[in-house]
Amino acid sequence: ESSDDGQWGSRIGFILAAIGSAVGLGNIWRFSYMAYDNGGGAFLIPYFFALLTAGIPILIMEFGFGHKMRGSAPFSFAKMGKKWEWLGWWQVLVSFVIATYYVVVISWSLNYVTFSFNRVWGENPEAYFFGDFLQITDGISQIGGINFSVLISLLIVWGVSYIILYNGIEEGIEKASKIFMPLLALFMIIITIRGVTLPGAMAGINKFLEPDFSALTDVKVWLAAYGQIFFTLSVGFAIMITYSSYLPEDSDIVNNAFITALSNSAFSFIVGIGVFGILGYMAAQTGEPISKVVTSGIGLAFVAFPKAINMLPAFRSLFGVIFFLALAIAGFSSCVSILEAVIAAVRDKFDIGRKAAVNYVCSVGAVISLLYTTGAGLYFLDIVDHFINQFGIALAGLVECIIIGWFYKVSIIREHANRLSDFAIGSWWDIMIRVITPICLGVAFVQNTMKELAAPYGGYPMNAILKYGWSVAAGVIVLGIIMSLRPWKGKKSDELISNR
Ligand code: PHE
Ligand code: NA
Image (cartoon, rainbow, N blue to C red):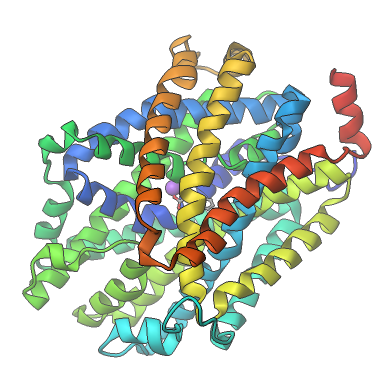
């Protein structure tokens, strides 16, 4: 064994890293809005249903699969059968595409940490973000120049990620997670306490949690819950398979999956209360209805929050620094996990060391990420993110359940997990993986595809949707198949041969 062959040094190290991957920007800016938009408190019913029928079962499957196969996603699927290797590459390439724009959002967050000190966004945070800061062009066909303030923070993001990954599993990712995750938890608590203690907060929180039970009869709400669970747990894109392959031989798979999933949900829920408390305060200050002030995603973080920070009674700069640092840390820990999924795959396939693989992956990734620092970068990011979510994560997850569920004995993974775990899972689990989850994801996929074909996403011109949307979504599959046709080198190749 070469010294750079990684393994987690402790169980808590693995769990913190897995939670670090799961807890990302989505927990801060996606969950609470999804709940608000899909029945408020009533959304928790489909959400927990999806968590128990899909999220946790798939997390157990990915943890068990990676732990049993002991390798990256392409290697694990190739070990299952040569003809399934492409699925591993598809997931890895989806991860890589996500990494190239995720770093850019983290770099904006770092910029905003510095902007918070004197609130450079001024009285009109919206104009500041899109205009002064990003300098977005009038349309996607005008690329514009590279934005130097984003470029500098982007180099910092790549630099930090590089150092973490270069140092490997225990010395890099595990150590970073042990610093990042407690810090993130602390920031989250501060944000939430600040949020709930502002005047008007309760009205906001009520909007977030007020149950509209009629939403439960709407298929869209259930599909939204499944989509959120997949995205939030980082399942379906090679990460959890990779992370669990670094677990020691005897590790409790089932328990680890429950801890990871429940911590991630708790985080979303607590932050959601804080976010809606702050939105409630904003609404009270401006006299607008709460429905006017709620947003999600980039608009929530970089427009609504700066507005709210402007209105805070005290400690404005400090609160801004904490919020944007929390965003950056949540992003970093997820970003490192997606890059590691790619690095592990490259190492396995080409039999190269960690350092060489980190060099390749980070340098190619850094060059591609420049695209998103241009004046049209936000448009590219929006389209790529949309398509990779619709036709990457969820679809790859669906295919994964079908392939593992129907072309491999799922009971092998269940028995593997049970042999190591305190809690044994029953054969209900097989049904979740083979039937329930594929049906839910399948229906969601058909619905989403129909919506996609009815009108070009986001009102962009069709040629832009083809170039940055469909071709990226299809490209990762084609490239995945091409990668799977190339021969394996070195020790992993021997392992695959002796496995036949
Ligand atoms: N689970 C993350 C979230 O909720 C999503 C994600 C994970 C995205 C890893 C990229 C990489 O935000
Ligand atoms: Na998450």
